[in-house]
Image (tube, rainbow over all chains, first blue to last red; front, side, top):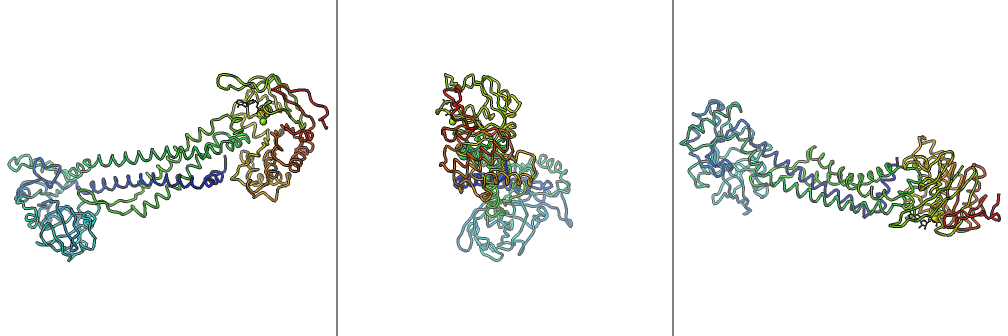
Length: 382
Length: 229
Ligand SMILES: Nc1ncnc2c1ncn2[C@@H]1O[C@H](COP(=O)(O)OP(=O)(O)O)[C@@H](O)[C@H]1O
Ligand SMILES: [Mg+2]
């Protein structure tokens, strides 16, 4: 076996080339980390957003978008009475009548952003128990309560949405009453207001849906039966988890695109790596032949060359991981219906590491084979 | 020690075949220092490569130290070389990123010797070529003569019975060349090494016990005037 120092020192023989290998691999690894973290973050938020126990009753035909759904404002009461197995707290059924509405919010400074607004009654808290007030109070008429990440989705400074701040929604002035958390869900990037205010803002008499929280996820058939029997209401019952899963698959092409882009760039980098490493190894053909003349097998030399490339690519991986931790980890990224947090989880880091290792090995194998192929007498002459 | 019986070597060069060596016979007893002379392209390097197991003959038998290496596999040859041959090149072929010490240690890293044993052997070899004080220098920090001494220490360190040298003094000034030749002479005389050295230079050949001339792949009669036993 050739000593590791041989591989290590060979790397420093040509510093621009080393920088190229380390930089190139760092870029690819960073790209893979970013793609994995973004896809993971988006998938995570969408899968965490829907509860198995929650059932959304919405207008038949609007299964793909609650915002487009229109049902009677009386549906809340009808469903409470008509569906068995709805969870109750202190005698109050967990049924939340909601309007989901996409519109613009403007802060005091005139900065404006689009986000999802949800008109709710205090019952919403029974249906969405993950919602916790961090500051301030639940909104009364003329007030809004903002999710912890709403500022990110709206693209305005966090300070503009502090409790007490004045904002304008469409043309109506409102006061921020509080800030809430709903860890890991899209609700965190929503703005919640009193149901009555949303009727006015959205200029509609109907509501979007009624969300029921069941005692048990297995009670779904009861709600489904209700929706099917009440033909007059033209309803569909959807598990909240299924609704978000469908949204998630709606974004799948986007995720696939991210992967294809990352894959293409990585493939380009591997081919670039072939050339860089080929140049590096080819400049040492005589030296590699000398090692064979001394008695080193081609396997041992091959291993040393792969080691060399692997060290460079692992250094690149380290750089990429550091950059990812500083620049990506914890960052929230807005997307159409909310925002999600990018986190460099162990799985994401592992994907980066595997990429670095694959780059190191795949990039070195063809050039190493090519440079070890010439017969010894010829290589010694070169 | 070396017994070549009707060995030939040909290379395919595109459509035609080049035969640098044809039906060559050569006997070299153990402990002999043999010089090979001949014009450029006469097949000296080719012969040296065959004797040292770097290349294999197209036909013939090649018995070295009791083993016919003519039909060894590539793997067998690699192992055989590490134990039996020390190769000295005209251009030294030191590894530029390694120090003199590390270069000399290379052949020992394939053996099962411990670190301390390796160290002792490397120091002994460097001492023998008079370069103990340069052991931490890299090749770039050494003169040509010093580089060749390191290369000799590297060829010698694993204690192979056979040393082959392809124009070892070809790139050196007279004084350095004499030093190298004196070293080779002493290895043959005091350590019983068998040495085959290719050279252009009649004065270098004079350091050997015997000189053979190679012309177009054929060994010509020895010139008795150059023999200095
Ligand atoms: N690997 C090879 N492929 C083709 N021809 C070769 C090869 N090696 C040597 N030759 C040819 O064999 C002849 C002898 O070469 P060589 O042994 O290097 O001569 P010398 O060392 O005496 O100058 C030359 O004509 C050379 O071109
Ligand atoms: Mg030659």
